[in-house]
Length: 537
Ligand code: F6P
Image 1: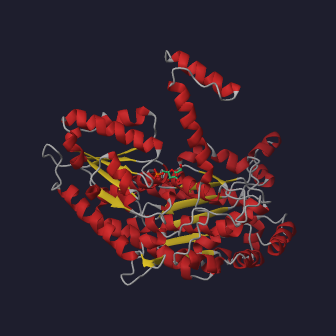
Image 2: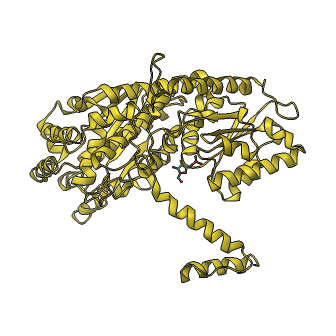
Image 3: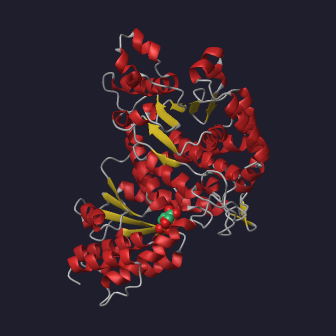
């Protein structure tokens, strides 16, 4: 990070250490309007943050000194910014809705391939949704089981739940990710083989969990339908690895491809979104992509001070690096966004959970935050206590919609009243004097006092639609990108997950070997021995 600008930010933090949000609002009645941005169907109110104009311009300077503008252009134009894997980073090409757009990687325009796969997905999904695609015994498809993990699961799951109101309700969608056999077993209890389509979703087609589950599902299907020939009617693949798909026994005619320049956690708008398209149809899927595209254009073109992802990224950096906030909370006030925090966890923590900079040197500052969250209002009755009165500073994003898909009495008014009230309570708290004025007895005053001054962003859209969902995902993607640029880390590799994968192979061979190697540490050897004894080996 640029030290000179950071020193300026630090001195502003020191200068305003004692200034509360309450004082900031009292001093400046136009604050809410000034610290708000509208883009791609979303309204961001970031006025309940510890900022003023001076702080915002210092933060913007931080972005400028990090060459953010140039880095954004590098991403959008296909430069190989994922340097440790030698790859371009072009999830934005997947949702580029400009019919004349050309995006080059190694001198080749990738857009014709993007459009071709999208068209094939559309044709396939029309056939399945209309009942024209028949299973091996001649029945139409009623159940879709997506088998994938990480980016090949979290995006499809999150979006399938989020867009339930747009889904084909007479079809049922399941997502199997865990190598825990319970996940597959319970799913298979809920489907009929003759009417089930399995989508094996894996960028690499080598991931242990996915390939094990896919193999077991295939065995189950062949066992139920009595022929290997059934596989062609009940299995499709979504992958970048044609050879591995063919080796698994899936006809590559039933494969929907994508490319190494799509990171797993950014792959929802690629063919990885096939299960979603089957659920909501190609027209709604196109609307999702148009929402992504609207936010992409905003991110690429808006000046930093009016740029929603950039501003959110800078605020996150202010708290992580300036105030020592260890975590960050995402709180959607919409049951349909119940998996959005989990989706953001992978996107953010796998991207910026890095401790060396682009030169391979240990960083001397905090990078990616621990990200977590749950839908409101449920969280209010569990962990919000700590956010309000605990010792940790936890910046929160509150996300809500003015209209609900399911109006029942005044429930939606109550939901939104809670969202707005939480941001008010966190910002302004309740003083000891206010407690006393309410008649709180002196010995209870310390317990009933709320310090306030806790920062929040509020994100509002009119309604949860394919468009607003796409824009929301793109907003967080670009926020994470911006932070990675400022922290000077490589946001698009994930070497940190490799070691566990390799060690698991060694442990597995010791769990099943006639004689275990005993090559591990004494704790791991002991655990292996205990497991073997319990299962009779
Ligand atoms: O283990 C991490 C990871 O590589 C993620 O980045 C990825 O989303 C997930 O595994 C699944 O990978 P694949 O789609 O290749 O099966």
